[in-house]
Length: 187
Image 1 (tube, rainbow, N blue to C red):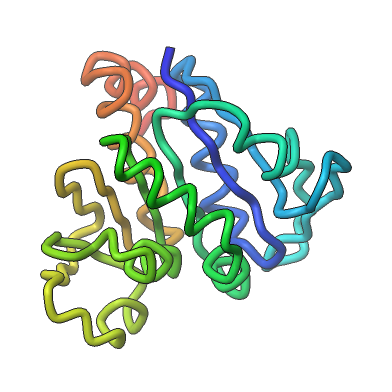
Image 2: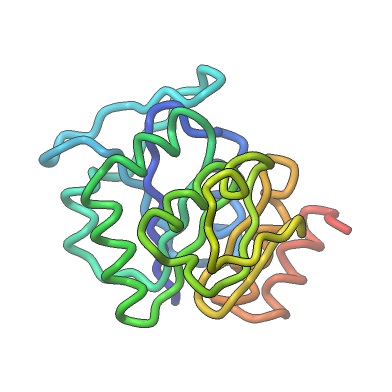
């Protein structure tokens, strides 16, 4: 079974975070949510629209585990908090170096760009995020989901279902993706 880490930062886009967590778990993929808290004390995270999320653990504890994929929800200022956390930057570079998957939606692809993971890749994000970063070696697309080798990016809350179904297909196969989509009455 695949093992996925989803860091949750204050001000994250709850629709994206919950969709990612929920759909991956429906696909029987192991998901660990982690707050940016230091140490081992887990505190609730208030998302961008005031929804309170309770992470499974802290990032300090989570990074002791080996993951197959790191998925970054967007939203502001959540994506900024993730981007400014050196543990996230280090983990992204480590996972990319090990040939593992990194994924980001909405404003979070800028975190991948700042970790230099979009160099020579195609990617997408919420309008005005990565296209304003002057990424000369990145082909910016307007597709709902862009999958380029081990990097997966998506546009925003309205694309969260397609994004997560794509992640399911990558980690568990098309049959599992179709099974989860059918259960959701999705397209």
